[in-house]
Length: 391
Image (tube, rainbow, N blue to C red; front, side):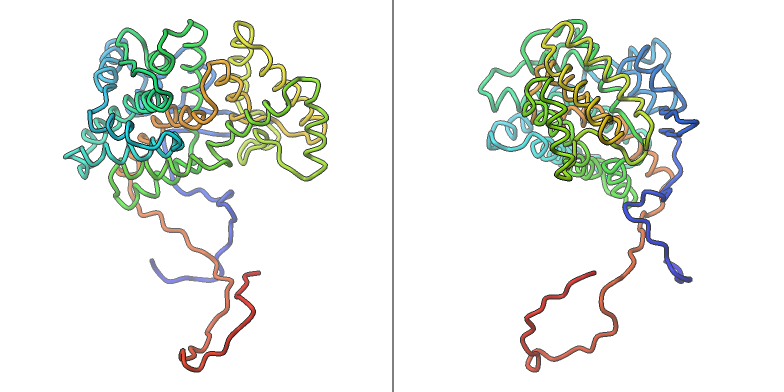
């Protein structure tokens, strides 16, 4: 580790620490505007012109594909959608009350046990594992939901793209063009976001040279927290509690007066600027509301206005994701899984980058406990009523 020199500066939450150099995602704040790019391409351009398969290719290979490369990559994903019988058996035997994210991380771990090349980390082997995980995660999520609700499994449809096929497997009928496009763009917007907590967890695991499945399991466990991927589900619970738009302002005011947090607002990186993904998600939510249930979008707008009025906070990526998922008829407890379906492309890209530029990630901690204490033999210790506290 090397000799320690001087005092180490504590950076709580590592909010001012740059942990690594990366070519995958750029986040920069310039003159009150947030820029988000994948491999140098602006998120707004990708949301408008691309699809999830193309963005996954970009994250994995570093460049946008040609037409033939994209067609081949899309076909490779389709070929990998099916689950092995053992995984289907696992989904069948897990208790139906198991949280879908627990199911997902368990299934990913099981997939690793079936990969005879699990410990191979060459670029070629890593890309193969990455394509398999990108393709299979939507099937895992859809199959478990069908199983737990007593419905017949819907096999993947090779005529549908990545996003549309998931909605088809989940609901048993093909989505509308608006629905398919909404989920496709949502997955693009969630595909990567630099060193968020789950991606950092994946890179820490990769820095130990753990296998890719273990790295992704680390990421899924981290994503599950309500301060990360679980936030959109909490937003939906809030929208259901408010129930009607005209109650939003009073609800927000009461919560803030009690010192309680309004989920879906504020961001560690985007301070006082709009999260660029929110702009795209709000438009998706608006379009879905026009064709479906308008209530959730109207409540969301009312909450956004009230939070800005009383707290001057802006919505983050989780806020409008909730009404998007609700109008796609996705159960609340699957919201985090949808996040994972998008973010998997970023996770595997970061894992591969970590393997190829690796240095063990091992930060330090500032010790603030008691020092140089005298050891007292057990027979001579007296009962202490005060427990050790850390100030």
